[in-house]
Length: 452
Image (cartoon, rainbow, N blue to C red; front, side):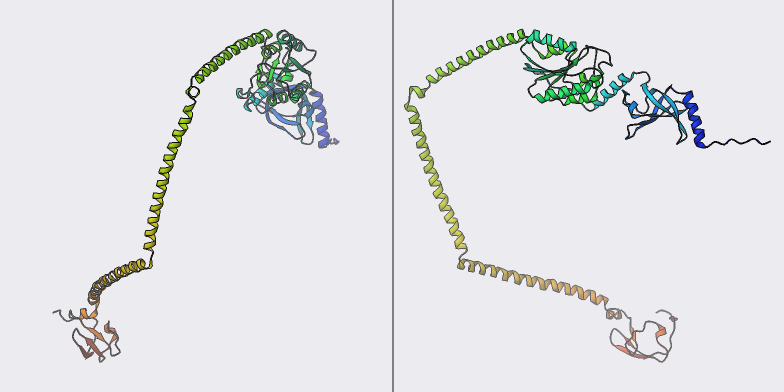
C-alpha cells in the first residue's frame, strides 16, 4: 500500500505561512534597536530592529511615517507596534509598523530635543542675531487665536498701560493640525504690511501636545527670517518651545510680552516731562553760551578799530611785494645759470673742440697701442722660449744626445723589434751626430752581452 505524497509549491507554502503568521501575530509590540534605517523616494522607510540574539526586518509606510513625531535613526532604542507579515517574494517575514515610539524619552520630547539640537547647530539660536525691541512702538502685530485668553490678557495690559497704540491681529489656530502653518502665515503677512514695529506670537498654557505647533521647524525658520523683531509668548513661564529659542525675545506669558513691548503711559509722560526739563536746561546753557560769545565779539578790535583790517591788508601787500621781488631776482639768476650751462655745452660740441678732443684721444690711443704691441711681443717671446724648451725636451734628438740611436729601414720605417728585420737587411742607424749605414749580421730576442 503506497502513501500519496503531498507536494506544495513555494507560493502555496508561503501563503500558508503568511496565514499562520497573520493569525498568530495580528498586532504585537516589538522592542529593539534601529539599524540600517533608510527612507526611499516613495516616502517609505525600511529598517531593522535588533537585540543581542536576533534581528527583525521592518517597514514603515509613508502614511504612517507622517505620524511619527521624532526622527528615527540608527542606534535609537524604540518600541514598534504592528503586524507580522510574510513577504513572499523574498521568503522573509517582516513587521509592518503602525506606531513607533522611543524607549524611555517620549516621542514629542525626543522630537523637541532633536529639532532644538539641529537648529542650534545652524546658529538660529545665536544671541548675535537677536534684535532689540523698539522703545516706543506705534503699531504692534499679534499672531494668536482671536478667541483665546492670551489675546484678552494682552489687550487688557496694553489698554491699561497705553491704550492709544495701534494693534494688528493676524488670527491663527494655535493648536492642532495645521496650526503651525497658520501662525507662520500670520508672521509673513505682518511682515508684508511694512509698518508693524514688533510682532508677538503666543498662546496660553497647555500640555506639550497642546503647545506642539510652536515646535514646528517651518514656523521656527519663518520667525528667524522675519524682518520685524518677534516676541515669543507661549504658555507659562515653565514652558519652553522652539519658537522661544529662535525669537528675538522670549516672554514668560502673553501678559508679560505686552508689558515688555508697551511702556506705561505714566512712565512715558514722566519721561517726556524729564525730557522737557532737560531740553529747557540745554536751551538755557546754549543761550548763555551765545550771549557770552556775543559779548566777546562786541569787544573785538575789528569792531572798535575798523581801520585795523585795512592796515593789516597793506602790511600783507608789502610782504607779498617783497616776496615777489625776491622771487623775480631768483628766477633771473636761475635763468643766467642755465644760459651759462647751455653755453658750455655748445662750446663743448663745436667742431674745433671736438677735433682737439679727437686728436688728444687719438694720441692717447696711439701711445696705448704701442705699449700694448711691445708688451704683446715680450709676452709672445716668453711663450716661444717656454714652448721651445718643452719641444726640445720632447725631441728625439735630445734622446740621441744621451747615447741612444734610432734604427730605420731603407724605406724610412723605424725598427722597434728584432722580428721586423732579418740577417742581411740593410739599415741606417741615426746617431746624435751623423748616421751609420749597416747590414744585419744576426738577430737576437735578448741582449746576452754583459753590460758595460
